Length: 258
Length: 300
Image (cartoon, rainbow over all chains, first blue to last red; front, side, top):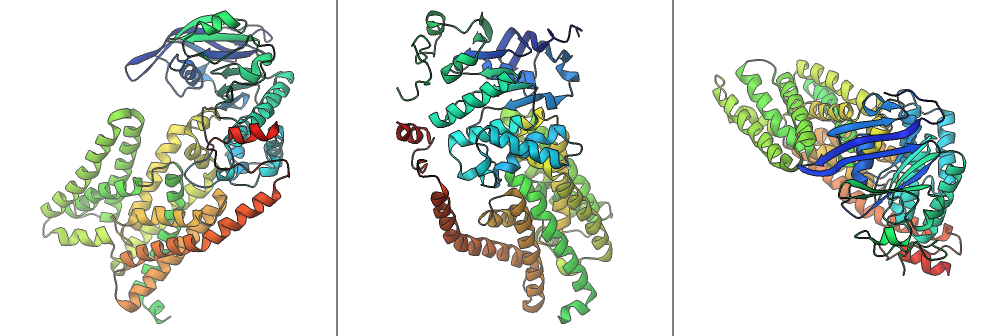
């Protein structure tokens, strides 16, 4: 464990991380550093390992080799989960039993509670998180009554409920209608302005492009590019990126409708 | 109310009420994580415990508790490590458990499959005072876990991957859910029987879902249904001389059907109210699966 100056300490640090799903190697030694306040996009085609990379960071997929650190602490010893907000790749926030928007978002606050008891301040944070994603008026509704984009907004509110310093989002724009995309982009802008560090898995840059400081492109479990968000040439050289057009003058749409 | 004069009926009713509370209380988490049939699997494994209880001349209830806890933990570990071959391993566990029960009970002195029947389908009238003590203790544990840890269990059952990032001990909570389900199976064993226990874990929850929008309401309604049908079934079996386990399960299914029929106009009214509450510019999201095109087109 390296002890560094508080300001430059990387929030996420991966060194030579490998991981397998079954017997198939998915990550083949990737290095990734995200510094405080940075917004980093993890790009790549389907099967390039970008979701697996994020899942090794949070510990859902075990890394077979390499080092993972969160806030300068080895992931295995990391306990300060309230600093991390996570939006998993989901098309729905619903489970097998009906649940209200508030019930789902409240579970994001558990990392700030003792023994799962929500106090008044916790309920206020849950309400604030719902306001941030524009879902406060649906607080008492069942998530089963929501659209795809609203599900995603609920999942993001759940991650924001703990007021995290680091947001990790896996394809937050997948299956999201344009109205919700704008709300999500705005929410993220506010979070970034407040100093939140963000690691995003994206299939395409889309409406979030202006926010992104750096892009890491994966291919076949290796880092192919780490630097400014790729422009026309680099991006289009990748397999599976046939509908990303970041060279257009106003890339505010995702290309979902074009 | 003359049935309350008999000690065996008092014990039967107490056991039935405890089952009516505990089975839906843990069942709701199993349904939430889409493992509705886990109770059925544990019930199969518990048969080995009953057989062992007879063979070793100890209490079948406690022996079944021990064996089904072991089985449930094994099932959870198989789910964790088994990955692709997990379902085959579970099948072997279930049928091995059932075969073990039949084997052990026939090895026991004077034992036969007839002894097993009262555990398979319940035998409420033969619940002994020591059974009642065991059932009370075990039910207390189940209630403590399912209500005391409701927020944690909700989070883990709703989205395991997310729960990990809130710092919850996901694996421990999964094991606790499995153990609690196993305990509930043995609580319910004398009342509705090992083969019918899963119905009381799942059907009241499914029935409650017809009315509720929230998890909390689903929980409360499911437990209310559970208690109503277990009391109703026990009393009916006293007057009509029908098997209580089967009566309880059939009543539960009747409750499900009734609530489904009643809930249809309610759902329609809610949909209309939701449509009326929507601001004028906001289109009703319908027909298009992901709902994304609908919003986009109207905005232009």
